[in-house]
Amino acid sequence: MQTKPPSDSILRIILETLRQLFTREGILIASVFVLLIIWGPKGIPLFTPLFQDWIDRDPTHTSFRLQIVSFAAGLVLLVILPALTIRLGFKQRLVEYGWGLGNVRLGTTLFLAALVIGVPLFYLGSLRPEMWAEYPMIYRGMSTEQIRQVFHWSSFLTYELIYLTFFLVIEFSFRGYMLFGLQGRFGLYTVLIQMLPYCIWHLPKPMPELVTTPIWGLAVGAAGLRVRSIWYTVAIHWLLNIFLDVLILLHRGIISFS
Image (cartoon, rainbow, N blue to C red; front, side, top):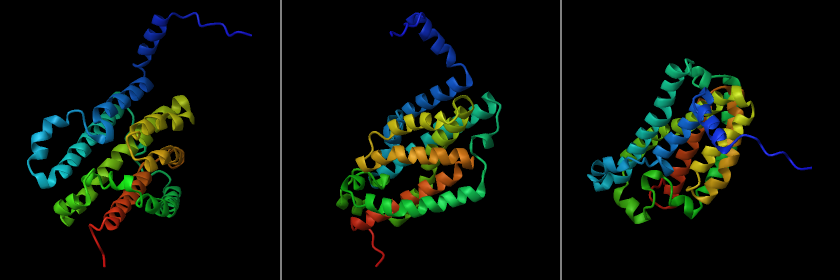
C-alpha cells in the first residue's frame, strides 16, 4: 500500500515553517541555533578577530585572554540574551527555566552519584593524549614545554574560577532554556531535542569526549526534568572538569604536589 503524497506545495511548507518561527517554541529553537553559530566551534566566537589585538598583546597570556573572550561571549549570547527573552518576550520567570534550586534532596543525591561515577571516568580520560591537546583549554594545542613557559598558578586558578561561566552557558542553554522551554510542547521528546545541538556542538571535541556526549546529554536532561534546576549539573560539570585539568597537568609534569 502506497502512502499518499502530501498535497501541500513546497512553497506552502516553507512558508508555514517560517510562520512557526514566530511561535514561542520557534523563537526558542531558532535563537539557540543562531546564537550557538555566533558563539562558534569550541566556543571561539565568530567576532573574535575584533579582539585579536588585545588577545595577542601579551604573548604569555594569549590563550588565557582568548578564553576570557569565549566565556564572556557565551555569557552574553547564551545566558543573558535568553534570560531577557524569557522575562521580556515570554513573560515568564527564570525559575521556570531551572534557575531555582528545585528538588534539593534529589539534586544533591544525583550530584553525589555523578561525582562517584564521574571521578574514575574522568581519570581514565585524563590518560588519553587527545585529551591533553584539548585540556586545560587555557593551554589548548600547546606542547608540554610551551605550557611550562607560560604556566603560573595565579592565572591557572583564576582561569578555573571563571571556567564556571562556561558551564553555566552550556547547562543553561541546553538543560535550561531549551529543556524547560520546549517541555510543554514536546513532553519527554525535549530531552532528545536538546541533545541534538549539544552533540553537534561537541563534534570538534576529542573522540573520548564526543562518544560520551550523548550519554551525558541524556542523563542530565532527564535529571533536569525531575530536579527542575540547572545548578546541580553546572556544579558537577565544573568540578569534574577542574579535576580533569589538574590530572592532565600532573600527567604532563607541569605541576606536582610532592
